[in-house]
Length: 199
Image (cartoon, rainbow, N blue to C red; front, side):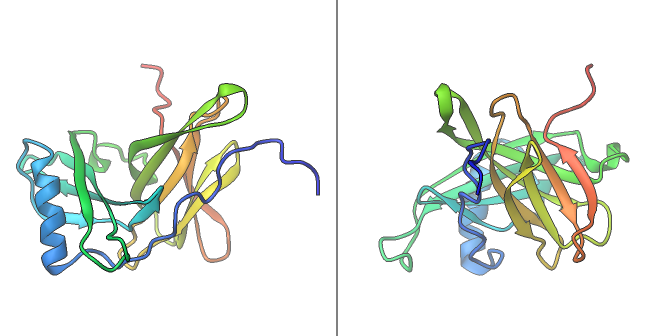
């Protein structure tokens, strides 16, 4: 096998392990998320968890009364035996008025949060980025994160069409693309994390 020309972390995070939060656990996570931003918002949509470097990240979105979108992440460390109470809960959240309804050209509705870095060759640093979202086109079964067309993470869609990826971004002038595929492996959609509009 030939040497790998692009040395980056691939599939660095554990695949999703838990069902969507519910009951008391959902209440705990919701309290953290609501405490991270001074904005009132409604019902929370939880996305698949991803675990990296001992922390589990649970992304979420919600809508405000005026139609803006709150997006954020609650993270925690599992208890020592991974079955006890989670420790070190913390949350980050923000709000945007740039929603899918205002962007009919979108094929994927994405949110992202940088959660760390990875130092590669010649001091280059990749930003380890959590990306969560939903497809806006039908037929998808799996989402991938690709850096210069190299798949660095993937996540099957949940029954309600949600996915979470954790991947290196902004590395050696390469930027992350998120792609949606159907069960036959055909690409249905592709979005960059970056605005293509020079304005």
